[in-house]
Length: 324
Length: 243
Ligand code: SF4
Ligand code: SF4
Figure 1 (cartoon, each protein chain N blue to C red):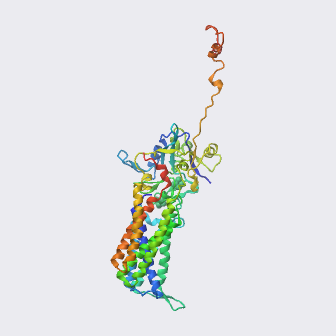
Figure 2 (figure 1 turned 60 degrees about the vertical axis):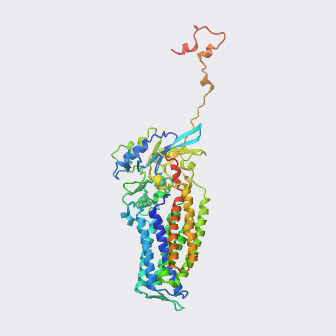
């Protein structure tokens, strides 16, 4: 498939935004349980939510560049019963709304009590919003990944690993960003967040490697024989039916030599996982190093997403083997 | 239930592209607006087509066959392209099984084209919406046309009658009979899309030459072969028969 930059930015930006929000709320839960010192509501939660919201909005804006008719984009919420794309279109603004409320509640110190646990722990409105936001963030990972994983004949994508990867990679980049952000806004939780970022990046490396291994072993189900229904081992396409290009010759291939694909694979394995792991381990609570770790990881994830698309081989390409 | 479909006879198709041009001609002149046709005389012409004819060579020289292979939307009975559409612009009609795109609802997200394993959908680069074969839905029900012309433009245009049109759920239709009698098959059955369009395979046309076709029993040469040789002036059987 042709990697479209609007989709690369969409999926990586909202992934980092979701991860950052999850990181903020994780800190709040730990602080609530008195496992962490409570960071400053303004500086950490409110500004952190603003940063997460900016990433989500950035992703949404990027997605419009993918559409032929962006002015009709509102229509895409219609078929949520059958279409994962439609579900994503609903869950993304819902999450944006909750992140906005969550940040706003922390900013204004609006914390009416919702529930007092038997242990005497007070759960206020920000906890309620955090729980809803967490559910939405995970739902959004599921929707985004299922857009790709639900297409059975794109076999590189049609696997539960796709969902696991989107979740772990979004989480990893979000926690790395949260650690870098905390170095300025709440130094007392930087270590905690950097530790989680390390774990998530490591898990991401494992699951992404698993899907690389899986995809390397895939055998195509569709062949030129099933595509035109002729049983003969030697079939060669002589003409695709036209001389210039068409949608079918542009949309479904990345148009780069196989060597590029291989180098991008090593680049993203290094930039999205190995380098950030080293930086996270070495950073301590140094803000600039953590920021560098996030920058490298984000660029690495862009490369990872490019590879994700480029590697998927659409069966329609069987009909376009000979570009006349 | 009706399921309209095309049946394409690969044994007869000569790869002339008449269906491609007549399809473009009909569908670019319709009420849905023109189909893109960009830089037609330039260096890199491009545009949207609903139907393409491709050519494959099967076998190894000298035992090869050239197969011309027309390809358009197969109007799958279980179309994977429809449920993925977020807007409902892509839909399958209950009444006749045609899969259509509502050009006024489509946002051009291209997701349905990813979900079609056959590459049957093309974005119109000028209108920026998804387009595909409509089975000439604006023609086959047109009552101002004589009954015999209420068929898709490609079917009307095919000079060798390689394209048949009808309801594959009606066992007596010409398409159902053709599929039954000539081993019609569907493309990529492995994905469970149940394409409505079927293809008829290449068929061998065997030639049996019998002994008596090589040597006529009344062959004058054979008569001539008699010994002792008859004289030239003597009548042969041919002279008796050729009055
Ligand atoms: S051939 Fe493709 S576009 Fe046509 S109905 Fe089947 S899946 Fe949809
Ligand atoms: S391109 Fe149009 S028809 Fe296709 S899935 Fe998107 S909105 Fe639906």
